[in-house]
Length: 607
Image (cartoon, rainbow, N blue to C red; front, side, top):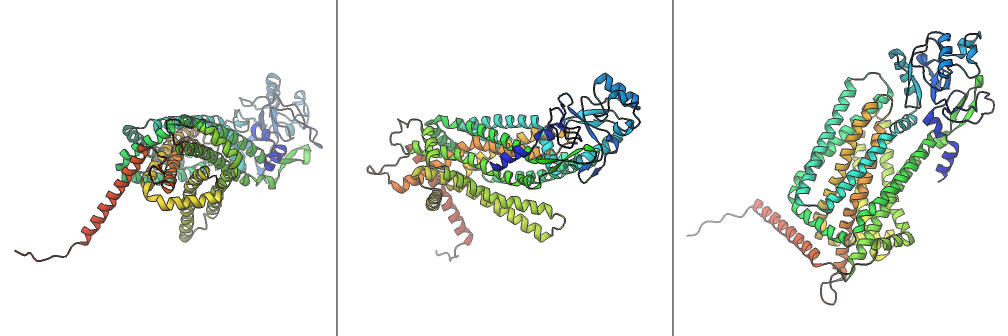
């Protein structure tokens, strides 16, 4: 909250969005004067574009451009060769290309007008949605302008400019991810064997297609670079990383799909059990909608604060009455902490959903009269969450965040020392990444069971974690295999949503690849698509985990007799019994095969 308040107070997002001149005026806005700068504080409402007096010979020295920058009402679309043509353009269009203190009448009269007006000839330019700058259109000027202007802007501003110039595309891709997640949720609600086969086929096609597109785009960037810009080089590096990661994920998922292909029929029965539990509280399917709305609100707020952090600076007057904004180094580096806030708060929002769903499932499961379900189980679970168990979800989401922080630090160190890496260091880093990834997944699964145990017993986070580990270790043989495969099918649904969203982003962002770092916005879109898919499809995952944990508690406290009858219905009991028989039969076959491999002693034949 402190960072949010200070960044909004000290930052100026308008400078990043609309651009500003050399005298501290933000283009397209009414400005306040800066003490010591006589040309500051002007009304630039009608002057929305940034114009450089020396656009063909830009130079940057210690992050400051040598050319004077002005706010103009329109960019010159034709080449202006003389000051008379500059004066005629100003009188006809109302766009004054000389310093504000020089009247257009004096463009050709004042002796020092050459130093106050643009360097001749003025190349034709066109406004581009990157800080609303007038970009020169002649090839030689464009190359120099882009290489100096874009390459000398720091990484944070390049990322922010990519986000802002592609904000409409990002919003459209988020809506696409929402639509795909809803479609997948209703597919799982009415799932059949045919639908599972279709889902797996779509996942395979989507993974192979996205991998092919990523490698093709990387090849296109490598052999078809029109100009050597940092943005293009960064996009090319990110594309290579995306392509390698997607290829590895595709290979792993294809192997898992091939190995687990024989369990499809059992998975369909499992989802039918889940859907029966959901039918007792059908509003569980709408639970992700408010989670999605809260995530959208939080993400918009997070991006707004990030923009303010990127522009936090104090105005300082330099020679000639010009103004430059000195960055506040301390507050700008706090965007790393802001990134931690993104992970923690997002996980907290998703944890609240998991806790709510687990509480509703627990309420419906431990109800003796199955024909008379409890009233408003979701509202009851929400009230219990906000009154008693917010500390539990805060701790659970913090545990996940603390595991992901070292992964982020390791990734930063790995990229920083890329030129000094040896084979041993690369191997050590990759082993650390793998260990932290496995720990992250195990803790996510444990957290879900902790929330269910909290909903059953009403205990705190640490006590619930200890009880959940005991229950899982004692009764894991009942449901481990089928539970894992059910989670795997749900994960394939999330992968399908991310694949189609990333493909749409690749096609959309690739059109504006020269003047924006679109790899980072694409990564944000992929992360957001996974969050949305996870928030919707995790309903089934949470119900599945909660059902089996309730089943283990039921086995621990009851024996099925008339004095202690089970809370589970007959259909669920028969399903678990059938799973246990299949597991016993598989274990018996494995034991027999081992005996056959060892062989038996040969004995003489007696007649």
